[in-house]
Length: 475
Image (tube, rainbow, N blue to C red; front, top):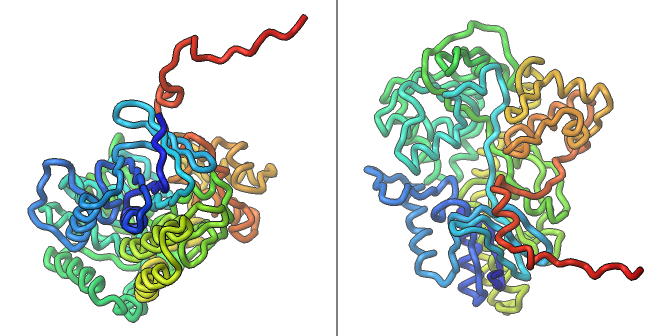
């Protein structure tokens, strides 16, 4: 049976949950769907059921408040559902706890968040190497350390959040390796200071790191990770302001885990598969949908919000989600213009207030072309299909002009992750090899299934009598 509703919201992070609440409060019948067991997304992730964290930070408290409001609402919450198919006008098929499920509504809000970016280096596929976002899942949802002795490396403020989280749970941070030098962070202080509450949270992380006397290498990047069958050490070296390796002494750290990340990439599969217009924005993490100020895409009754529309962070995403929910309710004639304008004004102001801080953080996490250019030929770029940088270059030299042609030549992006891990870097490599702007090489053509699901989940249950048989052709 297909669950009919006024509005479907896909993704229960801060953006999707706020969108669902705003639309529901305006009178729409709303279904909120997410793969996770509860609302909160990555930033405000809920701990596992039955797990009580000994100490809560601002993100955990914000997540608890969001989940409490959702529990008190009329929103139909469908968690633990893996949506694998999406169709026009708008139908979602999902793998649920009891088998296949279907949902349909005349309006859809896509709030599918972001996925992390790791620029490949030799050894990044070794067991023990984990993304910064993956490490936060272990720390926030499961209270588990990523390793006994961890190197934390990459770019952006998530470095300090993960390092502080490891220290708070009694782990050892062998070193923090930041691609930015101290001057770069000093230049960002005016933007960060525009949100003193968030700056204060960052200073708290820094204070705990200083207290633990963790070695901090500013202006350094990972050169390679080594180990026979699993990670045993990480070798780092100086990088320039653009992320390219620079002259200087390499350093080695023994460890059993490396938490590494180089920013986030918008998870915009839904607007792409429905053929909404997109454009490339390096600051915001990649290709993002064209939106009006309220989250309307170029497809009628399709809305998008949150980090899937450009990297901004949890709190701006919540404001953008509320705008999308209000817009859906207004377009469904559940709000008059005066009420809509009054309610939307609050969220528009919140977005404007967060923008300087969000732009500063996004700039710290933006992809650095010089870092990509320094990937060595033998380094694996697509870890699902073991495609190296040299194979991507060879495909371009053989005539692959865009990201999809390169995919056909090499199988890059054809694995279980469907290019989520490698796509951004692979497209940058194609653009650099061709010597053209990044937007000329495009993005993966989206196809179902959106997520890997068992085949019997896709076909459901049926009998031979259910199979339509056309009448025989007349002789």
